[in-house]
Every structure is written in C-alpha cells, then in structure tokens.
Image (cartoon, rainbow, N blue to C red; front, side, top):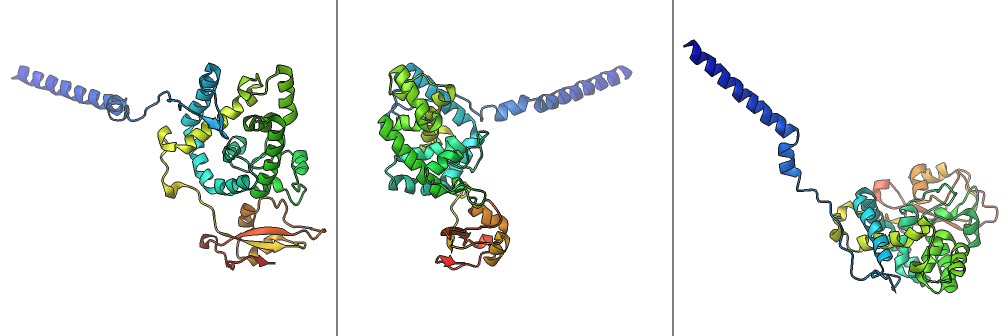
Amino acid sequence: MKKHVFFIIIGFGVVIITLLSLKGNKENGGDYKKTYGNKYLVSSIQLPNNLSFANEKVPLSSVDVREAFDRELLVNTYWQSQTLLFIKRANKYFPVIEKVLKKNNIPDDFKYLTLIESELRNVVSPSGAVGVWQFLKGTAKDYGLEVNKEVDERYHLEKSTEAACKYLSEAYMLFGSWTMAAASYNVGKKGLMKQVVRQKQNNYYNLLLNEETARYVYRILAVKTILESPNEYGFHVRKQDLYYPVSIGNVEVDSSVTNFVDFAKYFSISYKTLKYFNPWLRDSYLTNKSKKKYYIRIPKESSFHVSCNDNDVSY
C-alpha cells in the first residue's frame, strides 16, 4: 500500500513539473513564437523598374545609383514612425505647397524636398536654418522674406515656398537640370558649381559629392516612391488617421498690435492657437511702423471655439 502511495506521489510530481515546464515554455517564447513569429516580416525591398525626378530619369542600371537608392528606400521603409508622420503631414500641407509650385512652374516632385529638409515641421537647424524650407537668414532676405524680431516669414508656408521657387528657378537656369537644382538646395549653387568645374561633370549621378549631398536626392526619391504607393511598402493609413487642413479666415492688419494675447481673445481663441496658425509672428506684439499689410489666420473650426465670419475680416 505504501509502495502504491509512493508511486502516486511521484506521478503527481512529474505531472506538476511537466505543466510548470510547459507554462514556462509559453512564457519564455514557445507559444509566442508560434503565434506571433510569422506576423512581422522584415525583408529586402524590390526596387521599381523605372524611376524619375521631375521627369528626369534616374539611371537605376548603374550599380552605384541602384545601391544608393536601395539604402534610402530601406531606411525610410523601416523607419516606420517617421514615414507614417510624413504620410499624415503630407495630406495636410502638400496641397498648399503644390499650388505654389504649380504657379511658379516648378515640378511637383519638389514638394518631397520639404520632408527631407524639415519633416514638414518648422524646425531650426544647428546652423540656424529655419522653417519647412530651411532658409538661413541671409538667403531668406535675398529671396524676399521678411526676417526680424517680430516677423519671420521663413515660418510662413506659402511665402517660404514662394522663396524656394525663386531659388529653384535660378538653380535650374544655372545647371539646366532639376535634379541638380535639388542637389544645390542642399550644398548651395556655388558649392555644386565648384564640383561641376572640378570634375567636368554636370550630372548629379556622376558627381562625387560629400556624403550628405550624395544621399540628398536619393532620400527625396525614396520618400517620393513610398508616398506615391504607401500600401506597397507596408504603410496602411486610414483616412481618419491623416492630418487635415483647418478652415481659416484671414484678418487684415495694417497697423500695430499692442498685445497678441488680447488680439487672440478678441477672436475667441487662445494665444497658443493664434501662434499655431501664425508661427511667423515671433513676438507678442507687432510694431508695424511702415503700415504694411499682414494677414493673420484665425481658425473657423468649432473645435477651436472660434466666433468668426466666413469672409475675411479687418481688425
């Protein structure tokens, strides 16, 4: 009898150890791997057969070109959070940029340059370049933008896009190529021309350039490729997940504004909201001694609790 009890106890022990082992195996990845292991796929990416920038063909048959493009396509495909934000922001801001590019006869592909320059954000670089188009102060003034302590139009999307168009038009006239114009936006017209003269070559894909400029156009091409066909590269974004423009009214101001906090309150919005829609206003007041006309944007969306007429208004 005692012998039977002993074996029963041993049997129970084996069962318990086995169950604990199975549980541990599940917790340590046995079941997890079976359930989830095949649901995340990391793979190389098939490159398109044909690729162009501003209707200028990319020579993908050249091994160095193909590898350089492959690198940037992989980086942007697998940097998922950034590329998802690119897709969302593009839906909001590209329509504005496209309109200005078209008006100035600049190829539509240049809208992708803003994603490489600034991620479509009003950032400030370590060198002091500002805004979506990343203008330095001197260059911004050269192309007609107002830059001072109270107003900095590098933060104004339409006006900075107009300035970028002027630069790109000049660069195209100088180099005779939109691809080279794009490269010059990174290294400067003088810097690129120096390499053209030194290397006796006016084709971006045949020039030996510093690493940043050598990657620059390929980065634009990679972002363009993904955003034109996001589903093919694993990006599935619902319409409700995209960022959208907000309906706004323009308030004409041709005099000084003593306090933009009170100005915002007058239109039933916060000072923060005012600055969000008018980042080019750099202080809490506007002197405006020259009586210049400015158009300040006021959101009409109910989510911003705005009481504002549909038509433009004067303040």
